[in-house]
Image 1: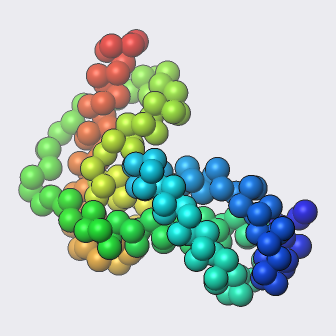
Image 2: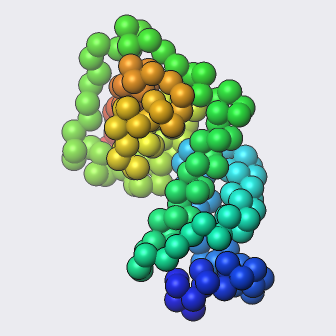
Length: 182
């Protein structure tokens, strides 16, 4: 079934369409939740809650062409993950810009390219919640520090410092991995 028909049937509360939507998108959306949450069991809970929210607010979705359903689903699921992190005080993992390392050894593109995506995503998932969330929003969602600050209810300097710190931690992990496995 195509996206437009699937979305129309979900709006009508068609359970077969809802199951098809879940089957079609749950793996991708679980990966998204896991990227933000970092813990598989909690990410599954957030995915479950996110689908409940999706089904409740499907009336707000309007089809705008191929890919618009997936984009809407991802936006709702990211918001659900961010809400979970805020509600559970996971965003209080902030540091001052003054506490961030001044310099870190940036790994070369060649070194990064030999590491599998799975290993890189594992490194990202191991970041502290605040660092991971800012890193994901900045890198994958292409949000500015101003947008991140508004989404997470933090100031822009905290967003910038957490991104810097996340990059420093990831650079260290990548460099260690290359030394051990390269």
